[in-house]
Length: 288
Image 1 (tube, one colour):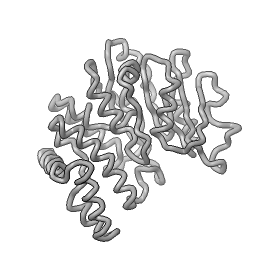
Image 2 (image 1 turned 180 degrees about the horizontal axis):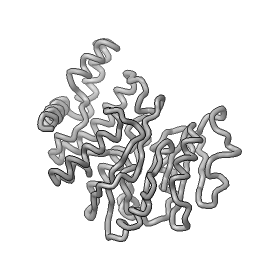
Image 3 (image 1 turned 45 degrees about the vertical axis):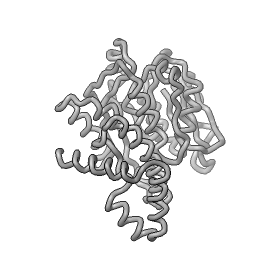
Image 4 (image 1 turned 30 degrees about the horizontal axis):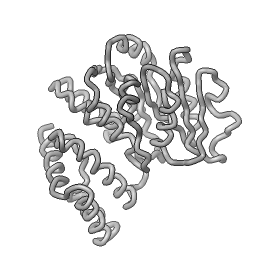
C-alpha cells in the first residue's frame, strides 16, 4: 500500500484508519515536503504505528516522485495505491482477500465518491464500468481509466518491466497505468466499489486551469494518445486540441500562446493525429 501525502494530515489519518492493520499489509506513506504550518511532524499520522512506514522527502517533486520512493520500499506480492485524501470503504479488504486468491496480474475494481456532483471523478469511472458490463469491452477499464487507485497489481509485473511514475506536475500516473495494463495478461474486472474518491475544494482537480496547467496536461495527453493511437483506441483519447481549447486559449491568453500550443503538438507528435483522435472521441460520445 503506497500513499503519497502533502499538507492534509487529518485526511491522511482518515485514509489510514480505513486500512486494516495486519502483518501482511505493508503501509507506506511518503510525505512530499509538506508545509510546516500545515503539518505537525512531531505527531505525523502513522509515525507511531508499527504497521505504517513513513518516509519524509524534502525534494517536493510531486506525487509521481513520492510513489516512486514508495516503490523502492515495497516488499509485498501486491501493490495498492491510495491518495491521502481518499479512503477504502468498509469491507474492501474482505473482497480483496477473496479475489486475490486467483492467479492474476491485476484486479480492477470500481470506486465510489463522497460527492453527488455529476462531474465528480467517480462518475466518469463508474460510467466506464457500466459500459464494460454492458458491452464486455474490457479496453474501457484497462485503457480508459489512467489512475492507480482502482487497481491491485501483482508487484512482480511492475518490477519486471521497470515501471515507474512520471515525475511531472500533472498526470504523473497515466503512463504507469497504461503500460501496466498493456503488459498484464491475467486480469479480472469486478463491479464492487472498494475505494472512495473525495472531491475536495482546493485539490488539484478543482484548481484554476491556467495556461501552464493546460500545456502540462497537453504534454501528458500526447503520451496517452500516442499509446492509444497505436492500438486504434481513438474513443478513449484525451482531447488535446478541440474548438473549446482553441477558443479558451485565444480568449484568455492570446493568439501567440495558441501558436506555441499547436506547434508543440506538431513538433512532439502530430497535429493531424491529434485531430483524428479528437474525432474518434466525439464519435464515441455520440454513441453513448
